[in-house]
Amino acid sequence: MSYKDIYNSWIKDSYFDECTRNELLSIKSDEREIEERFCRNLEFGTAGLRGIIGAGTNRMNVYTVRRATQGFANYILGKKGAKDKGVVIAYDSRRMSPEFALETALVFNGNGIKTYLFEDLRPVPMLSFAVRRLKAAGGVVITASHNPPEYNGYKVYGEDGAQVAFPVDLAIISEVNGIEDFQSIKISNRLDAKAAGLFNIIDKEVDDEYIKEVTAQLVDAETVKNTQKDLKIVYTPLHGSGNMPVQRVLKAAGFENVHTVAEQEAPDPDFTTVKSPNPEDPKAFELGIKLANELGADIVIGTDPDADRVGAAIREKDGKYSFLTGNMTGLLIAEYTLAGLKKADRLNPKSTVISSVVSTKSVQKMTGAYGVQYIEVLTGFKYIGEKIKEFEETGSNEFIFGFEESYGCLKGTYARDKDAVSASMLLCELAAYYKSRNMTLIDGLEEIYKKYGYAKEHVVSITLAGLDGLAKIEEIMKTLRKTEKLIIGGKETVEFRDYSAGTRKNMVNDKIEKMNLPKADVLYYILSDSTWICVRPSGTEPKIKVYFGVTGTDSNDADKKLDKARTAMMKFIEGI
Image (tube, rainbow, N blue to C red; front, side):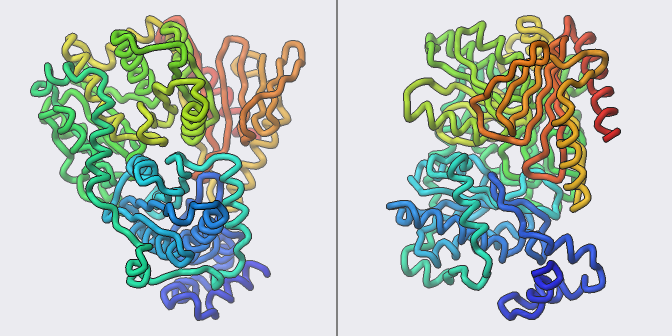
């Protein structure tokens, strides 16, 4: 059927509710809007669903959520014993999140699959922990992370508590894509499902155990004890799910001087105090910095709506606040963790740190200095989770710490996704540690740069929404893929990687090698001065992202190299 035929069927079919029909009737004269909503099914990608809330096959609504859940249910039913293990479901503060979570549970229940639903909003890492703690067959989180308010999403987790990876992701996608008739979806009602023992609310014991596991990730509890009254902390959950667990963890860890940004404490699906609830954006911290200035706080921390990513601002000695990037946070926690483990004589040849291909390269020098292993994976924390599972099954390595440049990290194996709750605690411990040395985290970064080199990174996100945007993203990637030997800022490409082809090409001798990594739409250039540039479409937003990394003799030299590479590369892309 054409998109217009599908649109008309949604209006006429009594299966779809009155609100849905009225919404669709309101756009009957907007042909472009109808096409946008019905040109395709909302894509169930390797991370699940994410899209604008609204009526239509290419939107987030109860019907597309039911379809995704039926596909996941079909996969679970095909696995021996998985049905009785059940599925854990969590949700954040976004529009329709509670409704989508309930619909998800009732579709699983309609298929005879037990569900465990959190009674209120909970962050991604708590879902990951709960899947493991309850020995469930998988999990679902209703969230769109830091996207604008009009978005929501559906993230799928495996029985190990990590986002599903190959080949499980493709198997679930196949099941979802095979569902063409919404009326074939099985759904129960809550009372019947509860009476049958299929619908269950998670008790507070899981919360308590999670808090205990996170608190155990402190590197040196004595550091906190020595500064717990003096260290001033400002925290903002940015209207999301982090408030309860972050407050509890900081208290359990011993921090006494914690102040929450009152205007951003309550869940708010409209995120009314910020343009975007994104801890990568300094503007999201305006109210936090205001409170911090009033208090003279040492550190301001903020978590995104699903509390898997954390941002921070540090008070320097002149009283101004400087923001940490995700790479800075990763380096600080990695260095502090490795130093603490070395002091305790707990490092060994199997000890391993993991980061993504677009994260700072300083971590490789760091792990080399400590004599531990380093592994690089594709962008997406599920690949770090996949490695943790591999280590657990084979005993080949011991996971110490993993991070991505996009403000996400994990210390320990109690969960298998990035955890802004534990990261918030560790950043506060780091602030306490440096305060005890009459230093700030910015001073600590300078120490790290002096040891491992002045590495600086930057990412440019180009938003290209709608069908036209999708076509433009494809055109940019296609053109770049053909242009292997870029000359950027006068520096030639010496190595070109195409992760979709799984190849690495030495541009000096034209030698091509295979890479032992999953296929992904990612292009990677290394220039003659070791500058690296990576280009990839976002898997969760209508964006194409361009990453840059340089190493300089000092901070100014690194800044100049970064600016030169960024200017030249973006000019080339704009010309496509």
